[in-house]
Amino acid sequence: MKLRMALVSAAALVIAGSAAAFPTDAKTVASHGAAVDVAGVVIPTGALPAAAAQAVRTAEGELVYQHSLRVYHWAALAAKRKGLPVDLQLLYVAALFHDYGLTDRYRNSHLRYELDGANAARDFLLRHKVSEQDAHRVWLAIALHTTNGVSAQLEPLAALLAEAANMDLVAAGYDDFAPAERNAVEAAFPREPGFAEGFLQALYDGLKHRPETTQGTGLADVLAYKDPSFRRRDFSALMRTSRWTAER
Amino acid sequence: MTEEVFGVRIPDSEIARKVTEYVRDTEGDLLFHHSVRVYFWGALEGRRRGMSFDAELLYAAAMFHDIGLTAGFHHSQLRFEVDGANAARDFLRSHDLPESDLETVWTAVALHTTPGIPEFMGSEIALVQAGAGMDVAGRGFDGFTDAEREAVVAAAPREPHFQHGIIDAFYEGMRRRPDSTFGTFNDDVLAYKDPQFRRVDMCSVILSSQWAARAR
Image (cartoon, rainbow over all chains, first blue to last red; front, top):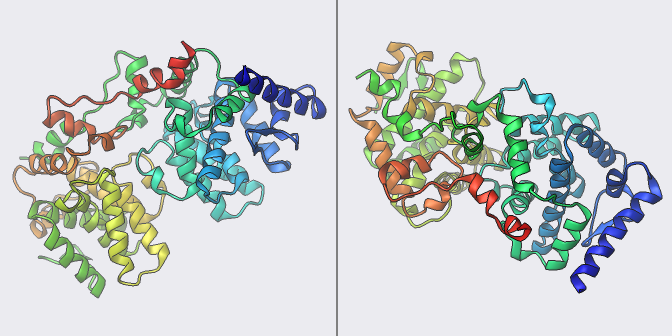
């Protein structure tokens, strides 16, 4: 019962926040009405965060967009819990753009999708007069958010982004969050039924024209899952049959 | 050891000498010579592409790039690349290099097995990855002349069955920490060497997580 109450009140907050400011676009405003607080985490207000949300929202489907907002909240909550200093505005932009490389505008890109998102975020921040150094920090956090085991060793911005993406996708660190925190975030930024399959589809849609960029990364599994004709490249075979050995 | 190949030299500095000595004492011939070749491939490629790079940092990163596979790290649960990156950073810090240089070397070692990203970072980071790919998998093989390849291999011998030796070294360095290979291509080495090993599939992890279980 208590749980249900928490869900309802978080949802009410969102609705109240959006109705107050821009009645036509509940979710974007939920993100930018100054008073909205989900589990103690506030989304940064101001022109830059609003423009970032706008840019990402118009390019991404709802499923990935809501995922990105949850990632921001998991990251901000983890920062608070661990006492890590983090610039919430940069974290918000990094979370928003972290899967931006999956969108339609990169259907001709042959870079890793993480790089497309990283480059878009950096360009966005530079256009908004954020320093080169901070823009680079966001670039690196997005570029390496799928590089397991390395991202955790980086500065808080990058470590938190990767950790939060894993929380939202595979529930890594699930029990480190209080049930009330999880419920509030989920109520404000709903995980649709079938999210896991839907997310794998979004990954595939963003990657299927560039399968070569997934080789040697975890994303090759997505190609293999969706496309029976896809062959993961085997690194050990690559070493055993390289030009070096053919020369002998 | 030959210190020069087609005008590319191993840096003649106190730090470079200390690095050589340390890695020489820590690694066997196979990894040591591999690391020296990675430096030469990286430096030759950097010169060919007109990149500016700090030869001393490139050398330090190339020499330390596989040190995380050595016995001192066999019981670590971190990725071997991270162990090597940390070791390089600690070593260089004790020789008073500036923090920004330490970060460059750390990143070059940490990302040397990460596909598709180092080439968009600093020269030294890009070149260590390129050099390692050339030496283990022949990536960019044709970008080097026959004479360059022969000279590098003469300077730092590549044993006849190097590919099996390096696979064994990877396996020995990672078999006690199989989880650290998830989502990387290092798990292919474990799968090749150990028929019992099962790669973890990212999609299965996503589809069977606590979130998905809750939704059912």
